[in-house]
Length: 334
Image 1: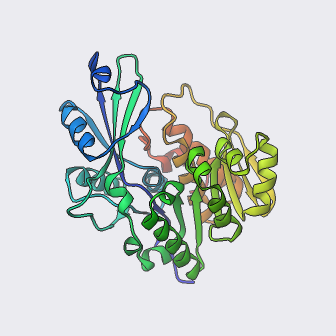
Image 2: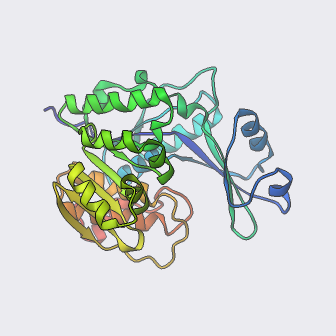
């Protein structure tokens, strides 16, 4: 097995988060339901984007991209594969990710859909109303999967949301093939309980067939996977099916099930949970990097929980502190 080029390579939806205040009455005039996420098409995306104020925040996002940014902040060698269009928001996404220290060279979509964006309107009371346009990120194909990049990553990590578009699904499986061909690990996150509901049988097959070596889930996703309200039963089932499962439990911390053995750690306390967005993404950053670098399972879990505690203490799904420095201050192995 050759030396690794990356500790963690992630594959997922490349999305730009655009955040702006909503003036009184705007949500109602635009026919939105406050506090709800609306899936929208191209014309609506262009119309709403044009109505956002000049002072809007534009920040690269997407679950797997957030995980890659977290790995880089922890001092790891990170790469990301995901599709944007050849447009202004594609520039925003690429600039943000490369500035975070993530290797990103996926070819852009030309002449087709626009770069995916989640337009978030924040009401005076802090309520967030989201409008998500998936656009170019759903155009990922097998041609975007580079054997040398996958083969050079200790762990390749993918998001379950990639299972929606047919071509991205093929890319997902091909990436796992290249990882295993090079004796590397393939990992994925269940992403969302609704995603699990759509693809339960296929996700279970990915795990049981050993196409995926690592599985990431929160409590709700894991229960949904095994269609049980009993967490203990769900853990017993994943212990039989998966080589490695990492399970986040919110304020109760996290656990890992490895070859049938269970290791649990508590959460790091935070003064105030400001925004839980990205907690699972950043937990994955710490756990994946720890495993890629041969840390103990407990240390990898603690690193994941610490990274998650940082991201929930502020607005936004990417770290604001230097996570490598934070882990050193908490006595965790780099």
